[in-house]
Image (cartoon, rainbow, N blue to C red; front, top):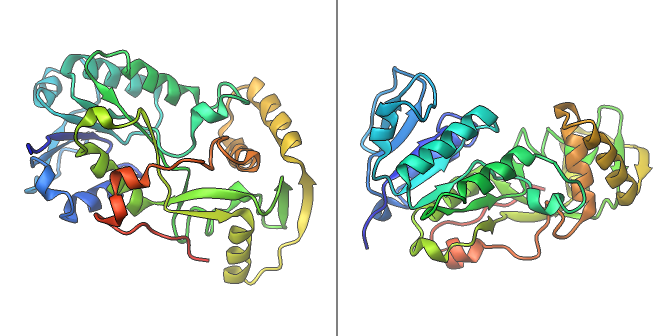
Length: 299
């Protein structure tokens, strides 16, 4: 079976490190044609056996050097943050280069599911994937991971998504509500597993993975234990009331300051509403954990 050639935008972003760790792990060496091309603004990075850095001032479809370097690449991975200008340029680059597979910068929440009750939430990302799918001959796979879990950070110390504040907990919905969660290592491995999957046509357009399934109460319990805090419930509203407030807030436009509130409301909506999935694709990309072992939330 032939090896795949890969190019990555955003290797030095938040998800870049776990993807780089997956590359250097050796798990996928038999399937990848090295070096992987990493598009970067930095000019002082040294190439390795596995990574060739392509230095450009900015991502632009009119940059002939960039288009030339990407011609013939099988897979284009996008790890950039949601930026309309960058998304637009990458869409034009995909049109010019026509890789066999594109993995857009999705991850996190299933935006299409949220759109059924809160239209417009992170629309920039869903519109980007839709635009990429207009390019004939290119397979586009959105990888949906639900919430990240990172010790010392996401859902360990950064716990606003479950309503924890310095003074107590603002509850939305059921504290026993389940959530899918993913480690960064599992996301990095998934990106490489999808990139090297064959035949690419057998991949779903939207692929959902999860390292573990936990509850809101699990996060509260571990935070209380680690910080030796007896967290009191400050306020309580129903999932339905939370949804109404979410919808009202979105009418004024997406506000980054409300992001934890958005996530808390989405969690409260439950199954197949954005952060808890009835069907996972773990087995498709990592059958029987034959490539790696899925991570767990440390309770």
